[in-house]
Structure formats: C-alpha cells, structure tokens
Image (cartoon, rainbow, N blue to C red; front, side):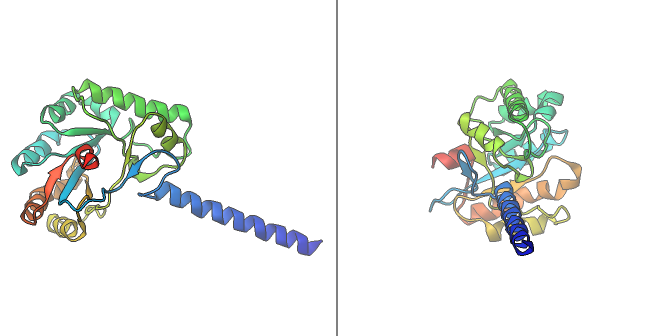
Length: 234
C-alpha cells in the first residue's frame, strides 16, 4: 500500500513538472502557439528586415519620428491603447508619417491566466484607438513581454490577427550602450529578421540613438527596411 502511494505521488509530481515546463515553453515561445499564426521572422533569401518599436506613444514620439525620417526607414509601432487615448496627437503623427501601427494591448498587462473577456477588452479597445489615429492598414498583435498561453492566441486566431514576435532584441539589457546595440543587431540579423527596440522612454535613449547606426550598417550590407506586414507579404 505504501509503495503504491509513493508511486502515485511520483507520477503526480512528474505530471506537474511536465505541465509546468510545457506551460512555460508555451508562454515564452517566439515560434509556437496553440492557435493562430505566429511570426518571429520570415524565411527569405532577400535582404529585408522589419524594425519594430514597442510601447507608447509618449512625449518622445516626435523625436522618434524625426530619427526615422532622417534614416529614411519605415517602422512598425506596437502601441498601447491607454497611451493612444492619452496622447492621440502622437498616434496620429505616427500614422501620418506612413508607419505601421500594431496592437500591444490596452494596459500592457501580461496576457496569461486571463479571461476571454479580458482579452477581448484589451485587444478590442486598442484596435479602436489605433483606428482613431487615421491608420487604415493591417493590425498585427504583439503580446507584452512576449507572454501568451491559450486564451490570447485563440482570440487572435478567431479574429484573423497574426501574433508578431521577434528574433533580434539588442536592447534586452537596458544598460546596453548605443554602440553595443548596433553591434548586436548587425551580428544577429539575417534576411527576414524582425528587430525589436524600446525607444519610447527616457531611460531607453541609447536604443533610439542606435537607430542611425543600425540603419547605416545594414543598408551598407545591402539590407532594405520594410514594415512587418510588407515583410510577411514577401
């Protein structure tokens, strides 16, 4: 009897560990989810990349747009609905400059262990705010912190919305210098890469300062910058 109890406990422990490891993988994977389309890069031989900028819009937006204009590249901005509601003029400026706008939820909460109603509210309200900017293009979705399990992918799949991750994140260390960010990007990028930067806050000034260097180095190597949607269309 005691042996049977011990075996049962061991089996239960193994099941719990497997579920925990599997859940962690699903939550953090950049290449797999249980429903819908997920993209971390595009398989292509063409030297094309997409530059994506997360969070905001904030008061830094005019400076970001100036840097992009001077570099002569489009970007895909993954914006939060509450910040669009607070700064509608900045969202409109991004749209007017011809950049792509994607959905990064309304409140930037982790979208795991959430109800279908919460997902619908976070995504739907942000889609509405994006349309208020005047942007008329396709809206893709990027989960805050890259986290997702089942409820979020199911909702996105039902609404024909692509989850867009990334394969190059050179500013994951907030203390990285602009030069380090440039060097890591150049080292890791490949045809079809999706580059993630965080440029909307003052403590990320180095990320914004790195954009001219990234663009210059990659263009010199024959790369062309496109929006995420253009990258996925090929």
